[in-house]
Picture 1 (cartoon, rainbow, N blue to C red):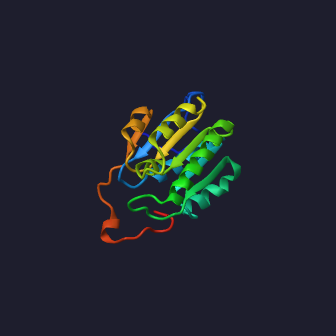
Picture 2: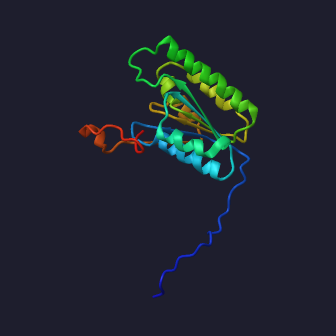
Picture 3: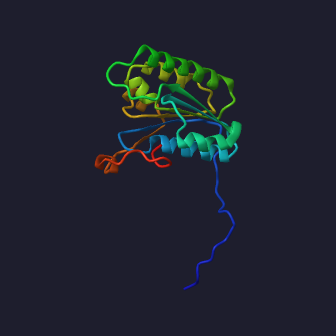
Length: 189
């Protein structure tokens, strides 16, 4: 039996041309929706694609934002929220911020500057009735053919799931949060 050796040669892979963008949804009650989307952003930027990230509901300098800043103008991000839990009815301010975000995202999509557009927590914004599901469906249909659109958040509406090309549901099997472990910088925040 031969000995395994390491090599710096890259395996030969075949890549489809990036002509058609798809709609991806990362949903479910498990951890990892935003993390998966940020990983996709890094991969896309590493391939030379420009990425726009719009974070709905959230506000603040999360660790992933600090890291994404290192990519310069290849990854552009904006936040459309107040960074707090919304219980019950969304406030007028929360709704206004979400709608402002949706308007900005429409402009981003029509600009043609970005090949990947990630809308983090937009699914929760629809569930909380800050945005209408139909507005998101219209956004999907209006995007240029070559733009990959990623929607994240819990409680994805069935109409959005039906329209998406790829849907991943994050399912919590076990989580240390239930033992009282708070979000740790660099891991959960």
